[in-house]
Length: 301
Image (cartoon, rainbow, N blue to C red; front, side):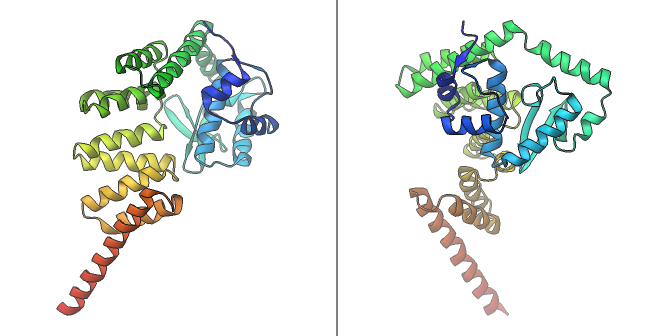
């Protein structure tokens, strides 16, 4: 059972470049090392998510500095607290509540004794056995990805992902991939179940919100689809696919102004793909319809 990861394994496992890893090391977000344990993976995953949401390194530094002042030098906010991006802000989930990382206001509500108890409880959540299990879960998740890539029998792929979530129920990526397998098989009930499990594991996982929105959209549940598309965009404002899909949704429910706004945002993010051609065509349809309706309105007066 693997307990440590080499540098190359971490780069492959997290799909991060050597250049990016070196940048985070230079910024003192993570230590420069050749051997990585589970806490390192937790910290790197948090940094990857913040980077996807285009949170600036300077803002990350301010947030970590503010949190470290309250926690003390012996604690690492990246590994001991749940940090996530809310738009361009960094927030912390703690004791079922949320706060802005830079203000640290919620942490100020905890006395020194209570805060020590809380951090000790979190440390107990990750004893050596659980760290080993999560490391093994990563192995099974990677195996599932490899099997999918090589078009292995779907039963083998499902078995690998199921092993990953059995070992680590917080493996949001494995839950999402299971959901997508069932989605592609048009098993809506199982797909919804697994996407919701992904969100239980990580409520700030934009991809899980997006996939769940696609499911509801496919089933004609426009209200829930809209809710989860918007949540995905709140978490990741530059999520081009979410802008594309919610634009189609707004067209379907006859909200052309909102649809046009998301088409225009999509085209700023993706101006040259095949999908951009379709987006321009749909946007042009909306503009032409607006001109026709305007002309009718003038004629009626």
